[in-house]
Length: 321
Image (tube, rainbow, N blue to C red):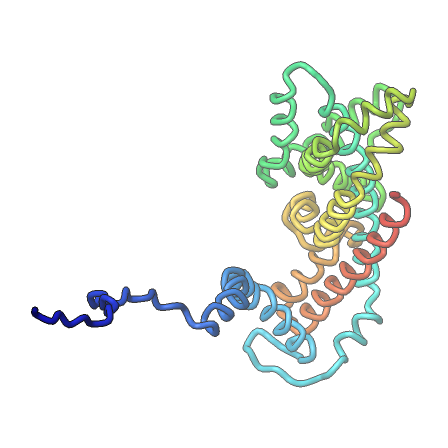
């Protein structure tokens, strides 16, 4: 009888398989760097361009304003002497008065009229698209063409404005001879050119207001005037702030319209009755070659814009609720 030997069962050894290669993970530092700094890299081109074409000229102009700088490039450090002379300069105060006067006469009617136009264009009118395109035409028209046309309209002897006033029994007005008349003529030019631009901004903001607010107000019996006062104006507060600030910057830097109204002369009339601060700055820097004094005027314009913008910001934020 043969003996059979029994052995303990042995576990089958699985065949050797090569381990799959795991994908290499990005290092945590690289991921954090990308998440933290990539937004700044994307917006860096703006700040680079602003640094070259905005910040550097601003700082350099401040440096020039502290020198007696002439056309030959030679300069002498005078500190704040240019600013002291500026405050003693009667012509500077005249240009400041002219600038603020034209700014008030042009900005307030411009924004009010733009608000009225935007309200009308926001309704269901026929040919709304054509009307919205039409109000932009003044903004894309050449400034020189605008000045030529309005110069003819406000001509003393053969102007259309004086002809219409003559029909009402008013004598001819020499629009360039007096402060208020010249300010009014220039303000009309500015308003005609920029009212449509601001109206489109107001219109875009009005169309972003939810319509259910107006429907709820109408159900409660609110009139259209009350809806405008209680819904539209409060919702337009950020837009008002934007248009006021932009109009302030443009109005206090007014140069082209009064220059062309004066037939290309930076004097702004025989007694500087409508010479703006930018015209005076240009005259001192590039006609009299007093670059230091012109730079001081430029910085005065900058500080005035900041001051008026802050005042307008506080006023609009408080009044429009």
